[in-house]
Length: 306
Image 1 (cartoon, rainbow, N blue to C red):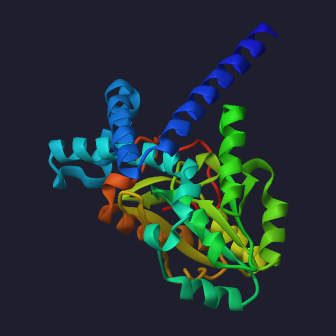
Image 2 (image 1 turned 60 degrees about the horizontal axis):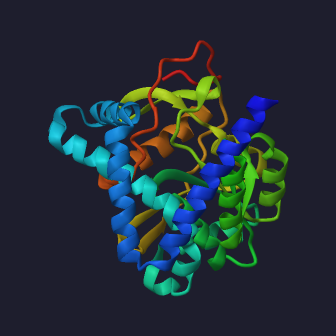
């Protein structure tokens, strides 16, 4: 009991500190916020040795000898900055939405319109690149359709609740990862959007598929859901183009592979290749600190053979 209370107190203090910092950032111009968050992330890059090592190792896997070590270190540091900015930007979204045209450019909305016309909803395949949380801004441009996102619970319950409150402020509906399947089907039957982040390690249930030429566990959830619902699968991402400026891109539908044991893996390969190209174009905005390439699990999903 004492351990539980101690942990809860620690979580609350972490939350209180984070909210105090966010409160200060909300009062400052975006240029000041950008400078402060980047300096803090740079400090984190120096102190978080394990994450720094993972980022540099991942860059070696993805780029090999095509980039110099100095450039890889620069990208890794900038990726830490990008991730920190992404967290701050979610809590600054109210300020950004006061002048949407100034801050957001949406490209490819016609792909959404064509998919909505089919009436079976859209599975939005998303990457942890740029300010991915701000993809939720799309919800303001697709009425009367609803937008939801499958989310992983943050360990700190106070921060988890705060983040979900900010997501709802943009009119997107967070769906808990462990309990979301029925709700996901209901959202798609209502011709809504369900966003799924697809570029992290998927564990033993994932298909073993190349990403940057190196096999790794990859989720096949977008294809499996789309197969059951008839929904369209569209890749999308949000990159930072300047201080407080974002480009949201929605790309054309990824056709599902023929239904066979290799179908799920084939569709996931297409999505992996697509996001490889996006990441190569904006390497400093991807989350290289995530342990994307691990040892092969002892069990694997059907269709996971490379």
